[in-house]
Image (cartoon, rainbow, N blue to C red; front, side):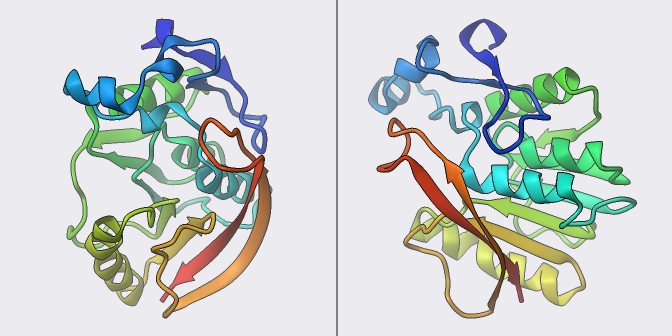
Length: 206
């Protein structure tokens, strides 16, 4: 994995280094069709998505307090938000992913940044609350995904967790029961998005 990525500092979070795909690395050029033929999930973990960048930025700035809290980075990708939480003194930083390559990337990225992030390959949706803060970056990109996760996220919020969802304007973001608390513009690449930036809003799930 390390040989097919480059160590990059995300635009919004230059304090953190990640193993990411870039225009010059082979993983960037592998199409989803080719990956599907090989039985490999698209490498979502290899990009610093706008939602995760904003969550990490607000954690590092102290706007999202995590010190002494048990934090879950849900659908974590490469673990950016979890790494930020670990840096800021979270009692436990956990990253949840269902892609084994993402789990490997999270471990590599945590080691690169000198922090400990617990990462296990599992679908945690439906599990009982064991976190104080749940972070979800850019997860409402498909209707089935939104329908799968939102009842669980709302239940965690009702049970006392602070559930924060970062969304860059995806079509399937629910409108009800969402409190917007911050918005930030994030530079993006046209290889991933249809524009050079995304306005990401952080919502508190109710």
